[in-house]
Image (cartoon, rainbow, N blue to C red):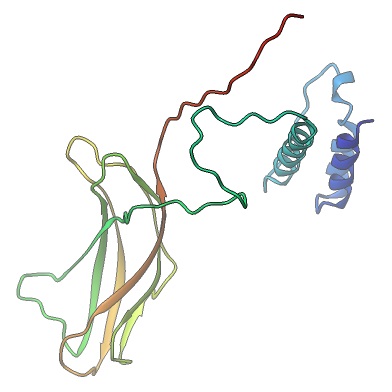
Amino acid sequence: MSKHNEEFIKQIKESTLDKKLKAQILAGVGAENNSKMFSFDDKNGEICTLIHNLGRKQTMDECGDKSISIDSFFATDVVADGCMRADIPDLSPTVSVRWGDSVNDNMETSDDEVVCINICNHYSNVGFKNIKLGYAFFTNDTNIDVTPNGGLCFGDLAPCEKRKPACVSNQLSIVTKNCTPGYRFLVLYFCYDISIQRAGLDAFPFDFIPS
């Protein structure tokens, strides 16, 4: 048995899977000798993760044993410590707030209003993923409740297409309890991933000599 099969068996035995499922998987390690395809119920993705990690480790081990390393023909950046910081442009979705049942509506010192948070992507070559409102609050007043004040998910925004931005909305409840009159800022902290689809080309020189 290979060392990778041994490692896989070890991981299965140490996993939190129930005993019956462990026995089924361990019996199937020698699947090359079976005449039928077999499958398992992998509700939490644990089995798939174990298999994926095993395959990745096997590939890394085999590639790490190779003796010759070839740099890219186009390589220009030399990174001494193995890491370098990329210059990422300041990209963010556009956020706006809408509220009020009419143009004459007002936010009063004792009030209950629903505010819509609209987020749009105007970029045609950039997407935004996992957009979340991390924290929401009003400045300089403890008598204004914002619900939810965080943990609000907006999902993903695809790139803008045909001059039409991709947009998504969600709602906040704002309740004022005899707060002080005057201007306040509604502060919204967002988290998001930037998704940019790119294509690359590289070339590596090989010198072939007579056999």
